[in-house]
Length: 178
Image (cartoon, rainbow, N blue to C red):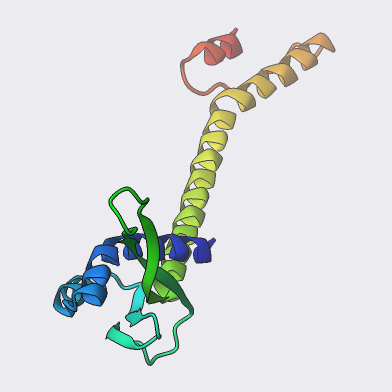
């Protein structure tokens, strides 16, 4: 699951970088690619390294902590539209380079762990509320009915001196008084 989330994150990053990567590889304007890459690295703790390579796998641009061991890395094609020989030929996409993105699983794993802890805390709170509610309902409804049942059973067996302890002033208390 975490790998799939990281992979989806990588795809979104590649979509953001695609136009700037084409510009860097075709025109040589690496500064625009570097600006966008730097901004992405500043705003995301899960991106460890972004590398732009040409077709011969020569590094054109490298940003981030590329030398450190990261847990998940992948390479994506940088594609540009190629023209046919004439305006009537269909345009095709051709690979002109690669973007390698290394992701760090730690932020995703930490976030998942926080969610699990929050879920466990929520479930414990719900269990506590249900326990308190069950106890209150038992004291207010079930115990008085059980007392009335015990008293009625004793009366049915001829123990006419039987008394029921009455608490409160609700319908069950009035029934106990009678």
